[in-house]
Length: 84
Image 1 (tube, rainbow, N blue to C red):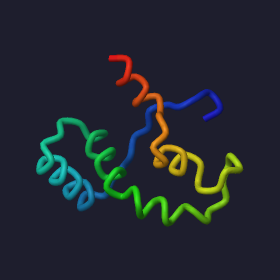
Image 2: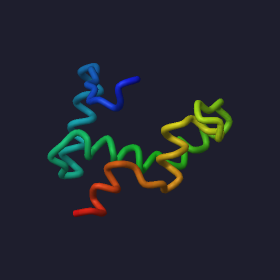
Image 3: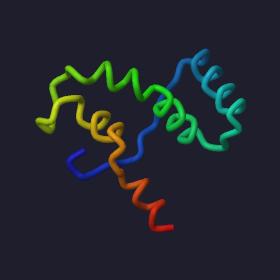
Image 4: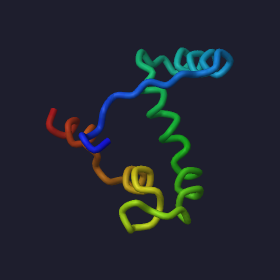
């Protein structure tokens, strides 16, 4: 948003929610965000392949958020961890 990043919620169909929370239980994560992070990390190659030819909002190619965050660059969460 123009005012910065904010928390968002997702609504999932019942069948998808069951699969998602089954996966979360199998992985042993206590938060949905950890499961989403795991899924994105495991999908990294496919996301990069899919987005490499998409127009970019920042003029660098790729699709902005995914191209930047999946190139191994530090994001705010990573920088916070480095300070701990």
